[in-house]
Length: 382
Ligand SMILES: Cc1ncc(COP(=O)(O)O)c(C=O)c1O
Image: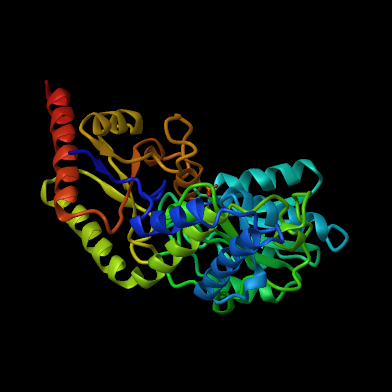
């Protein structure tokens, strides 16, 4: 039986989520902007989903904007803050290990005349906070640092980051896509001005996400048209998907502790199993400041493409890093930022776990990697 171990790329939609969405598709299908009863009925479900999402992350419902996913959330907030605060300053700060939906936006802003600092990370993938302190200027308007890295799972010290940023005039945004369902998310405790999330990483549907924007944040919204989302994101809201997102985030939150325990055990089993079979490997990233669902491993005996192909043939689905670059031979910008021009950049895979996986699944992954290793070892000696 095939084993899917690419849950950081996407997750299957949970049955309860499908059920909640089907109800909306079939019965409560009105346009939430229509003023008749059918429209008001859809509006009721939209408002209720907004309250649910806000409650889980400890925000106000009015601070939640529904989007088409984290790519849109990141684009909206980064361009929106940079452009609206142009008069205050043209300097922006992010890191070298962000998802492309953040990095490429900053690159575009550079082409538009903004000055962007890309912070370094250490070998664990931890952002250089000393450098952050040094680069902040009077004209810095935005700092965007992800909470959990999607390739190696490293968790940033957002407490210290927000303390440093609070000393400046800059807004703080975090891409929390890989944190939902793995870490408790409380925007007041995190003390961030904006946060992005997307449903398909925690058992919700693809193509729907949310952006938290703290009240009074000065931001130029990107999408013009109707007055939906209190004029901040034009376009008819996708109510079924939004209801699915709300159901998924509630489930992810309530099941988080139990899931984390199970996933930590799976990770331990994987690492110990590979060690016991004397398969050469090293863990990329932090041993401590990490979520357990992302395990990025360096296998010195084989390059990424060959390993991914052989595992795929054996029915084990893993990835080489972010899904957007999977299948291409472009070296991971995250591993490059962490290790420089190291063999690891071309010899590492991401195995990402989920509560749906069993100890048998992990055993099978270990067995298949061992088969590949033994084959390569034999060829090397023949
Ligand atoms: C850290 C991170 N940010 C943003 C995204 C983009 O999310 P979406 O697929 O909803 O556009 C992803 C998805 O891979 C991600 O892992």
